Image: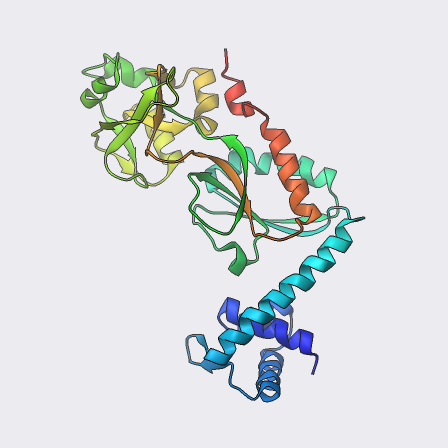
Length: 315
């Protein structure tokens, strides 16, 4: 028995939840994975897994062996990566996961230059608004927007995430109560809500007081959607006022198709920790050259301290 291959097959079967997924990932037959794990059980004199028609379940012995085997494999992987990275250049398959709208507007347009700069990298980009498990899916790096949940992932801040109140000139001309001098005036307007926010409220604080606690502002309106681009379309068509990220609306603000409102206040759809655009990736002792290349490239493309979509609007 190839003990290293058997351990790898066992660990990935546990992590992926099935022999067939582990076999597909390793490009081997399911029967080979099954034989590896049976050989391990014979060698150890203990059952490692209880098989059901839907899921694999670790026995007590299996849990103990999995924890040690997974750490051994991770240590071997780290040792190989550390040695290779000394003289390595970015290469291989890079799997990235990106929010759909942001990816279409601010990641994929730069990938031609990225691949030209790193011709030995092959890119597998998944655009989705779902939060995927990077370990389970084999994703190398993901871009996430907002406040990060606690996790074991490593996070690098790529750019700030700012939102602004916007409306079309048409809406402001036809609104029955168009005066907007302070946040409370929003109660007289149609506010286009983002369905993923908690409750029917936006939050604000004076731009001159960035350390102030956010104030909750109840909103009302007859449109709510879970898609930021749909909210943008609704605002452009004159349906009401939207609170949208600057990376989404900067072009429409420059063209005059949208107007910024109540700019003396900073706005958000939730109170709480810092919101930003982040790159997250699994924790490893050595970050692979292809991941480092992507992080550096995107950081430089976005710009600092202001990303290019905000710098274009700065006075």
